[in-house]
Structures are given as structure tokens and as C-alpha cells.
Image (cartoon, rainbow, N blue to C red; front, side):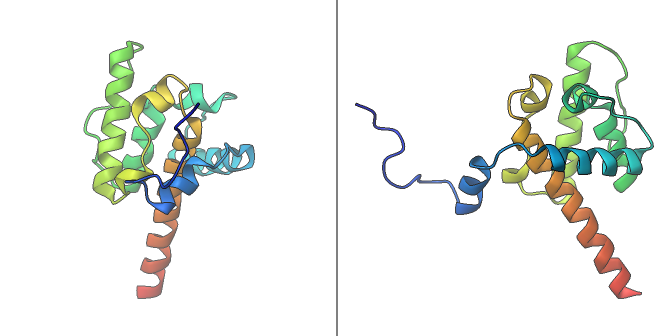
Length: 140
């Protein structure tokens, strides 16, 4: 007898529950690939997860959106340097204004654990950037 999935999920907002039910969308991956490569001028490569897993492109992305946010980007192939890059990116997007519930954990990307959450984070960031741009355009 299982006791899971019975009754309400206390502590989870409807927004978070709907995100959990989302599936990874290859079309959204292509849109994100195009956007990230356009903003950074860097190629992700054929494999989206492997291209982002060292955190270098993501740190470059947030530095393009908010210059100087990530002070040092590690280009070393040591795993702890890659994880440090991812941690710096996560801290930077929190500062940028993303909600903690929208943000992936480093291992979601690094170990290919939850690419749906990675996609959700990057879509939320792209959405925030485009809404900021629309706001700025309406002010001038």
C-alpha cells in the first residue's frame, strides 16, 4: 500500500506543482540555445546539457545581462571549478531577481539530473530579461 500522492501537497504552491508536471521541451531548448548564443556570442555545441554544464556560458550570459555580476569565471576542467561557476550563476540570477522556486540546483545541470528545472530557470530568466526590455522601451 502506498501513501504517496494522497491529499494536498502542503508547502508546494500551485505554480511549483505545475512546473513539476512539465516535461522537457526540445523546442524550448532550441529557443534557449538561440537566445543564449545570441546574447553571449558563444556556441553551446550539439549537446545542450554538456555545453552548459561547466557554467562558463551561463556566467558569461549573466555578465552580459548585468555586467560584473560574476567576478571570476573558471575555465578549468576540474569539477569543483565547474560547480563553482554554476553556484556563482545561481547566486547572480537570484540577485537579478529570479524567485528561488524558479532556480535549478547545480547538480540538476552538472549531473544531468533535472534538465526540466534547468529549462524552467532559463525560460524564467529570458522572460525577465524580455519584460525588463519592454519596460525600458516604454519609458523612452
